Amino acid sequence: MTLGEKIKFYRNKLNLSQEELAKKCNLSRNAIYNYEKNKRNPTITILITIAKNLNILTTDLLYTNNTEKTSLIELDTINEEKENTNNLELEIAELYNKYFLDLFKWKTINMNPHDYFKFILSLYPLNETNHLTEEDLNELSILFYRFLTLKVHERNALNENKGLNLNLIKCN
Image (cartoon, rainbow, N blue to C red; front, side, top):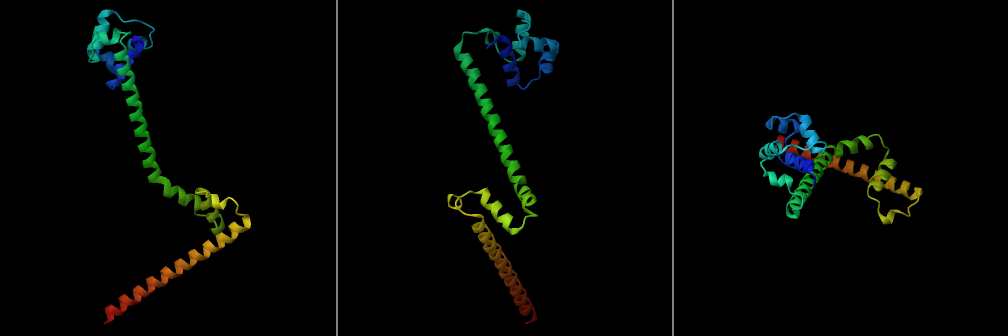
């Protein structure tokens, strides 16, 4: 890891922008940028100031053969990447939970029963359905629609009976 990469690494570890580190060190943002890109090398005095403001030893920035320190830096980078990945996965899961039903309704609201049934089958392709013909799918969609209609009528009848029973109880 180069000196510039180390400065950038420790700066990012403290969640400092180049401008913030520059302000702390009484330098310009451009100077920090040039150090991080290895376009310029800081003087020893500036290096000491940068290390002090990054809460590290100057030797942490200078050592290049210290594999233990490099391993720690790499491990920290890997952990940071894992944390970012986990945060991203959580954010995706939240968005999925928040918008899935809305998207599903939007996609299916204007579908006829046959297309709806085919769409549902396409979401979860079963090996058993691979050999179904279009005629089979039509027949299944008709049965599905009839079953759905029957269930709706059954539920409505039950709700009406409950309403009648409640009215009878109130009258008595």
